[in-house]
Structures are given as structure tokens and as C-alpha cells.
Image (cartoon, rainbow, N blue to C red; front, side, top):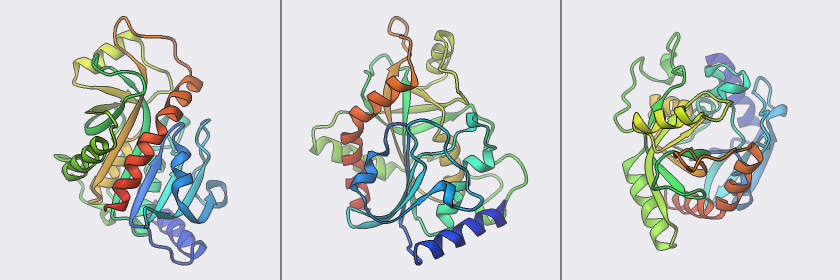
Length: 270
């Protein structure tokens, strides 16, 4: 796997003329609009990258964008890879490891998820300050020493300074944000009422099918992480409604301008 990731990184370095991004950005379901804010220098479809996985989920365009956001060099994934698509965990986290090899110093992540905190509302933004991993851990298997220690510390999965900065940006722009714990499940089914209740009981504020593996991989490599969720549906007793992927996309797209503003200002100030 190390050699595969190295080959992908070398291919992208050549394809972009040696472009070195400082920030890696992963855009979740219905949240690809941030790409419009990027002064794109190179746009590369996943299918055109040898040995790279390809997104199969609606709302994930499947492109890598290299360019400037807030005047700073970034690489943005318009679409991610999920465990439920059939990718192995090493493939799910492959892009994060690749981005590290091409130069990123920090990782920003977004996702669409369900809310289980009764104080939340559909359309809210939640800044992640912790997570609970109910996926198979992406670091299971032979450790690749080049990517970090066998037993990485996870006492600060999401960078405290970046969380504080994001809260300041949100306050200055009259954007209401929540802060909470994200619980990562495999999917692809949305949760049953009993599963929503379980997620809340174990300490979750929101539940989704991504983000956690990518952050674990990033933290193993020493990359500070910042993540924001859009609460697209509620999993609170008495407020649970039938939900479709299309509904999730619509809510995410409505919340996207606020998320984009926070992300852009965060990158510009980094």
C-alpha cells in the first residue's frame, strides 16, 4: 500500500507541475460547492488518476481540485470514499495519506449527518470536538512506519485552537454553530430508532458514515484536524422522519454557504 500511495503522489506532483498544497479539504455529501470558491489551477478526475479509488455516491463529483482558497494553496476532494461502498479501510484513508505525501500540513473535513442531540435542529452546523469510532479501525493490520506510530495518541483528535478560531469566525458572521461528538457507523442504512438512542446514550451528538477513519489516519501522521457536520435529519425520539439521500443532499446544499464561509476564513487565516 505504501508504494501505491507513493506512486499516486508522484503522479499528482507531475500532473500539477509540483503544486504543494498546505491544507487538505474533504467535502462531503452535497457540500462540493466550496470548489467554486477555489481559484483552481488543476482539476483532476479520480478516474484519471492511476490506482486511485472512484466515488460511487450521488453528490460526490469525484474530482481533486488544486488551487488557492483565501490566497492559500489547497487540495480539495470533491467526494470521498466510504467503507460501505466496498472499499477497504486502507483505501478509505488512502487520499489522506496521499495528501500528506504531497505536502499538506492540516486537514479540514466536512460531512452531512444525523443529529441525536435534542437541542439540535435540521440545518445546524456542528463543529466536531471529539468522535467515537464504531468502524473497524483503519489502522488495523501491519503498521506502515512511514505514516506514524503503531499506537497513535488520540487525546486531541480535533485541534482546539482551530475550533476556537472557527467559533470566532461564526460569531463574527452571525452563524449559529453547535459543538459536539460525532459517532461514526459503517452504513449504508440510516439508523433505526433504537440505534439513534444508543448513539445518544454512549455520548454522541451526531451520527454519520464518514470522517472518523480519515481523521484517525491524519492524526497518526501528525496532521491537525478540523471538521464540520451539517445536521441534515434528526434522530431524536418523536422527531424521527423517513429520510432519503436526496433529502440529505438538499439540506446540506442549503447550509453550504455558511460552511463555505467558515472554511474559507479558516484556510485564509492558517
